[in-house]
Length: 319
Ligand code: ADP
Ligand code: MG
Image (cartoon, rainbow, N blue to C red):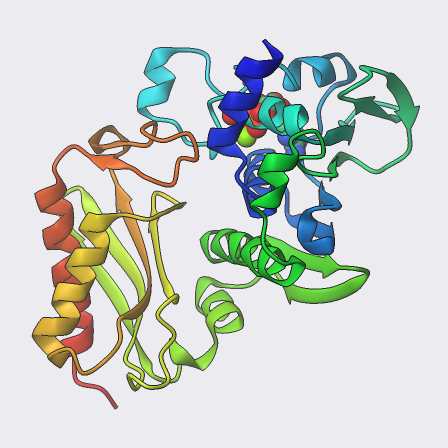
């Protein structure tokens, strides 16, 4: 069973950034308004994610660590319309099988917090305000082969920051902070979406960008498209969200690129943050363990909507 869980962990936990992504998902699912990420050595030595969400009741702490234990969906029908980031109940179990994991949580109505050490199973009273902290130490300590695949601390840190950035663009109403080796490296305060886009992506999308706003049938596409010089543009500034979930999706990428080709004839690098909202019944989010890929029931309607949305935005007269 140890082996089975380590194999399953490989699909969810590839590097520190995977852990940051999963723990931040959980914090947001718990209704956090502030998420603080602390890292040592690019996250390899320590990842701590602290939130002010609802917390986990004492008696549920051991359950949270179990495989396929989720408090978020109760039936197959829920899976059709899942509104939370998590729903597979895999992340904590997977992380706990490849690192030292401690859960520290306090929920409303509880006089104190409780800490659970995943390895020993020891549960003890602790101190903290309402919310949850998850501490993950020495990632892949017992699987040196996997640890060898990790890159330099600087590279792993960059991936961790990127993971938080993706969440920050999805949830401008939530504050985020990232600390590395005791230094504050990024901080995004709660803001409007426009302001968050400016804070996270800077003038590439704001000074030289246009608003995207388009609806067609069951699909709404909004956000911002940049039109920077090819030389200045950063190719990695392409963010796509489906119902609030960051995705890497060929349909959306292709549609956006086609629009840039049509309107700007390939003279500008596509740079965008696009938010697609669609009837949840028309998209399947349970196709990949990391939930970064989705499958649309009708990819043509999504392609058309995104393409038109970006075309209209780019073609609109600019001041
Ligand atoms: P999933 O998110 O798919 O449900 P996880 O393994 O990520 O599975 O988490 C297991 C369970 O632990 C969650 O369903 C939730 O009940 C609880 N949990 C994890 N992290 C938090 C958190 N930060 N705040 C509140 N509850 C949490
Ligand atoms: Mg989760």
